[in-house]
Length: 251
Image (cartoon, rainbow, N blue to C red; front, side, top):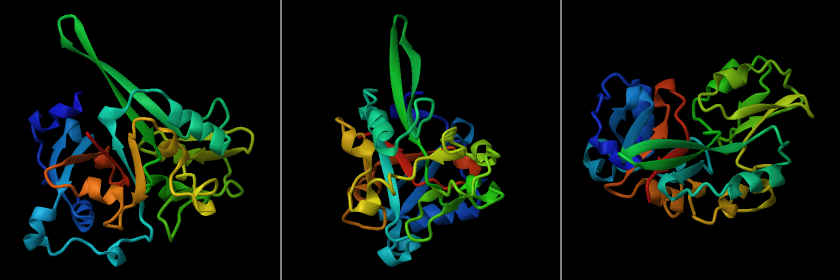
C-alpha cells in the first residue's frame, strides 16, 4: 500500500475501537481520524484544533512517564541503506542471527511496467499496554516505571518465548548466548543511561527517518512532528490494543 494514499482509502469507522484506546490518544493530543486495512492501520491527526471540545493539550505532568520516550518514523524518507541496523548490532552486541530493528520491504505495481518499493522500519513499539508484559510468567519483561520503556531482565527469563508469540510486531528474538529473549530497549543501557540523547539507529540514519525524544516535552521534535496540524500520523496494528509509542508519518 502507498501510504500517501491513506486518506483515499475507505474509512472503516472508529466506532468499534475500545474507549480506552480513544482516551489514551486524546490525552496525547491526537484525534483518531480513521481505521484502514482491516484495522491494521490507525490514522491519527493533531487534536490541537479540537481543544475546545477536549480541553487543553496535556502538560508534561499528565503523561504516564517522564520522560515519555517515543519514536517517529518518517517512512517515505527510508532508502533501505540499513545503517540503522548495522549501528544497532554494533552498539547492542546483537548476534548475527538476531535483530532489534529491521526494515520491511514491499513492492507493488503502480503502472503496467512500473513498480514502487516501500520501506518500513520496525522495532519494539514500547507499547503503553504491552501484550508481552501481560503474558510473561516470570516478569522477565516489564515496563519501566520512569521511562515507559519495555525492558528485559535476562536473569529472570526462562526461555519460554511466550512474549515472542504475544508481540504484535515480531520485535523479539531468542539470544542463544545468554539463553534469554532480547529486544530493543531504545538503547537504554548502552546510550540513554550514559547521558546520550539519541538511540544508535537514530544517530546512524543519514536520511533523518527516525526521530527520537520525549513525547511529553512540547519543545521536542517528536512532540512537534506528531502534533503538527493537518498532519496524518499512524500506528501499526492498533487492533491489538497495545497502544504503541512508535508513530509513522510522511515527511
